[in-house]
Image 1 (tube, rainbow, N blue to C red):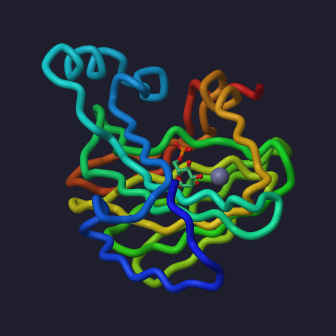
Image 2 (tube, rainbow, N blue to C red):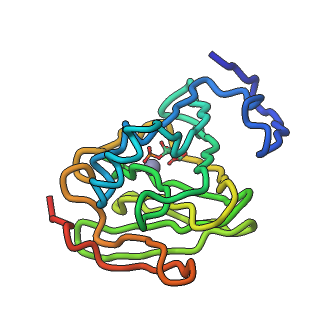
Length: 193
Ligand code: M6P
Ligand code: ZN
């Protein structure tokens, strides 16, 4: 477990995240995410040959919960599964707690939706910061040709709900269109859960 004495400064290279002093490192491969992609034939084809890493994240959980802030860095590797770009699973927070994303490198999108039916898709580019209110499910998508890397900050009290997304998906899909254009389309399989 990484411990920090407060206050502290942390300098890190987003392109050398193996050295990031995380207390937890999580790798999500295609086999962990087969239910999340639309093109099941493509998933099966890819998995018969290899099990590509889609993304990885390094977390530092605040040990004095509910006080303080937890944070982490996520790297989504470039690529797509069929027409869908590499993306995170996405989740809701089950207890009050907003989240902040700050892009460090690459380019991507932040897909969000609320149970009340509000749907938002924001751009994430180096220098942009996105604020995610508690009520919005959130997923990040790498729409570029390079690694997409961002910093996330959240209160340590939150719990994650992955089930809702696993069952009903997001209302929007971020896909590769003609001539590599990034398109946001409606997800025909989305269900309100
Ligand atoms: C960011 C934060 C984390 C999250 C991670 C991966 O780093 O939001 O809390 O866990 O992205 O996203 P997911 O949990 O949806 O796989
Ligand atoms: Zn979150």
